[in-house]
Length: 107
Image (cartoon, rainbow, N blue to C red):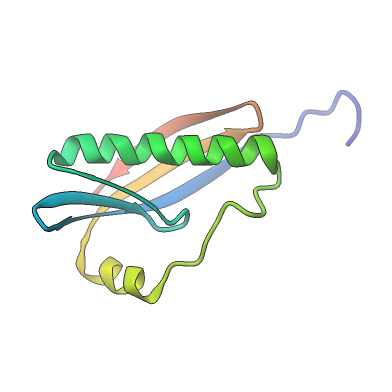
């Protein structure tokens, strides 16, 4: 890198699928293959956003290119995506020093 030249932050768009399973709400981030669950839909939606931020922040600190952050979705998750409610996207701006939730796009 050139001294004095700042690298612009990366912007990530992460898909979240929200569905009910065994009486609980389950939110899954497709690209990161992480999930959370609980009885309250709004809390689960909030939790998945925080988990996405934490995962991306950890990856940015240890792997600035984010080469190992993403995981391909399983066939089970692909089937779920076709039938479950698409809650929206979590959009993150990534800087190796911090991760900022820019906005959520709810369906």
